[in-house]
Image (tube, rainbow, N blue to C red; front, side):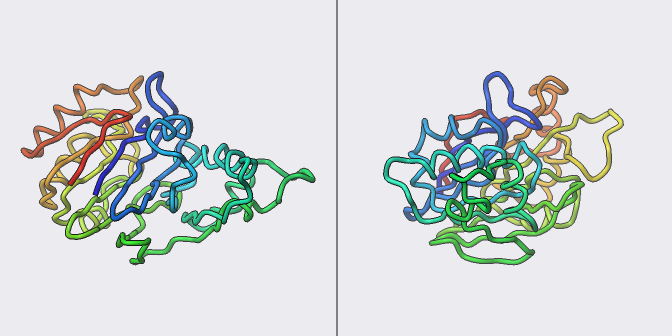
Amino acid sequence: MKLTVIGCAGSFPAPDTPCSAYLVEAGGYRLLIDFGTGSLGELQKHLDPHLVDAVIVTHLHADHFFDACAYAVMRRYAPEAPKEPLPMYGPAGVGERIVAAYGGQGELCHPSLRDVYDFRELAPGSFDLGPLSITVDRVAHPVETYGIRVEHAGSSLAYTSDSGPCQALETLAAHCDVLLAEASYIEGRENPKDVHLTGKEAGEYATKTGAGRLLLTHLVEPWNSREATLAEAKAAYTGPVDVVRPGQVFEF
């Protein structure tokens, strides 16, 4: 599998990175996981967006789906349109939420966006997308949120999405090659429960699950520190660990 980091800023875009979006490619299939604010522009540096085969939105906070609205314009009004609706997986109400954010109800707009997206609601369990085996489960966040495990030909990627500590993270990440873990919080602060992980907690999950590599993401850099987050993770996990940047590519 190949993982390309498209966006990795937490909560809002940073000067040098869009919000969460990750391109996973294997066996000729292209899956975009999350479609956060500003990510459509960065995606175009790596791939014609019309070549994406499916999108999974892990939860319905704007920093994880908002550029699905921008892409609706690109896809609907492309010179070669109409195109087949793109499979879009997400929590309950994903279609209604994206339509509301898009705000398109005029005579030129299909009010449900179903000319652009084939909306499909997630539930805990496993399913296939092309050659990829996908497993999702609910994680600890204030809204319905799914962590993801992607497997192909013996390789595996686990992605926490936004989550506080929970059992689902252990199950999804068990013996994965790469654990892509959010680390929005810093230890020693009064962090709210069941919202985000610290670098230390991400490192502990990587150790506990036997992950081959830890990639830290979703830092809110005005509020925390890359250096402190990395140090926390390294104190809890002795394997290879990085704080990701847009444009980085990992193959495994």
